[in-house]
Length: 361
Length: 169
Ligand SMILES: Cc1cc2nc3c(=O)[nH]c(=O)nc-3n(C[C@H](O)[C@H](O)[C@H](O)COP(=O)(O)OP(=O)(O)OC[C@H]3O[C@@H](n4cnc5c(N)ncnc54)[C@H](O)[C@@H]3O)c2cc1C
Ligand code: SF4
Ligand code: SF4
Image (cartoon, rainbow over all chains, first blue to last red; front, side):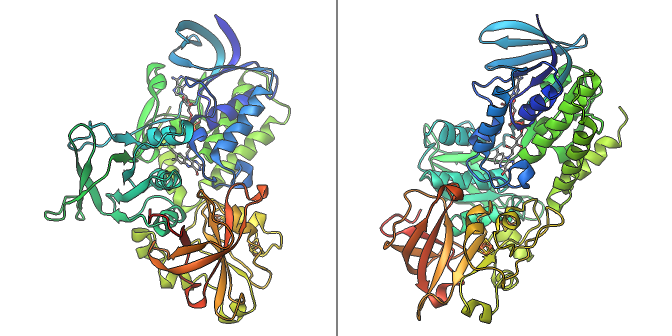
């Protein structure tokens, strides 16, 4: 059995920063991720990020991943296990993992769960045809492996992910026939929408996909307009010939481990679905488990990084291995979170967090 | 911000009016136009401007406010804005043409002298333009700034281009 002070599960922006914070006062830290590299979602983000310079705004996601990964690798007290999947987390502080085909146990005083999110699926006829992808898969193909997913894409969803992945498809030389969005409004940032619009991609709000058609793989999609009650309007169906249909219809927190560990779970739509109850320090109802990043509520890398720091620092306080200025660092992290969430785009998160705080442990 | 913008993603005349410099300032040379209409947590424009022409933000969600008298159109903010929402316009470029400095993140990059098709905010082709210069120093971090000469009357509309013989998409 491996024994460490603090174990961080998931090596995305939240987990990387949690590991850095957790080790900052001398604690031994184990960081594990089921991928063969650190960085989580960031390794696919070739665009410049928002936020402020404290969260590396203006820097491309992939470059943020490199700088955080380098910092982690340069910290001797952080041990990294890649290709390691966390399987079960138990009351006695023991985590079971599968590491390169081998089962292992890890004992830690505190855990930070930073497992991120998984993509939502959409029900429509033909959605099992080859050529129907999640946006994450399209990004991984293009930006990690350098493979074009197809020639012509219909994007479903005009949130930030749908808009950004459309832009990245254009950059890869793939044409985007249209972006359809069920809501009457574009959900993502308007500056991202403007980028794809001026490159000639139509955004069809109040539209949805009805079906994917094709013999052995996608040859096209049927889309239609929606009325105010989100019902298809008869006679507005149109066929769009495409060989890829890309779904960007939202993310849900990847919280299986937290269910299994018997953390109190809440259903909070504003945070993306089921999330663990947590206090203002990101501690769940199981006092030895903290959460940070998208698993705590779907947001952005900027807030994920800050949540990682907050959870990491509070965990060091618990075990008496905090850096000397820990209260200052915790206060700074809290302030940054409030600031990041203070605008109109942060409203959903604010509502979601208020709902969590309204619940008892 | 107009409701239409949320539906179409294309700023209309009224949106553009609200961020566009006056005739006098335009006539006096290169100036940045910040087509950023929505409060989002973002501030690199304000922090990168060497002349402090873009006011420091109180709150990271603030809309950018520019002092056009301080701006000299250097285009550093064009390359630094993650929204690719800043464009520099120089109406003094020649008697008939204006010079646009547009952010561009596609390959291949155009070369000085190339003739390109120019597109408006809705991606419609509205004429041709001539690439005058391509800035792509390491400090721009892979967002090139393309200097494009277009007819003066197109300066307010043109925000993108496609390479000469290339396909529309
Ligand atoms: C297209 C797109 C564009 C985006 N653009 C921006 C942007 O401009 N600005 C911004 O701030 N944010 C952006 N984001 C959001 C940002 O990428 C995420 O919010 C952020 O990555 C969340 O960080 P995280 O650490 O919580 O999760 P992730 O980055 O998802 O990392 C979670 C990690 O945990 C690992 N993991 C999961 N389960 C296990 C397990 N059981 N065992 C071991 N490891 C596990 C995963 O492999 C993964 O590496 C974008 C996202 C997408 C998809
Ligand atoms: S063009 Fe140059 S001077 Fe003008 S706002 Fe941008 S960075 Fe500042
Ligand atoms: S950097 Fe660009 S997107 Fe961000 S606030 Fe400034 S103008 Fe808007």
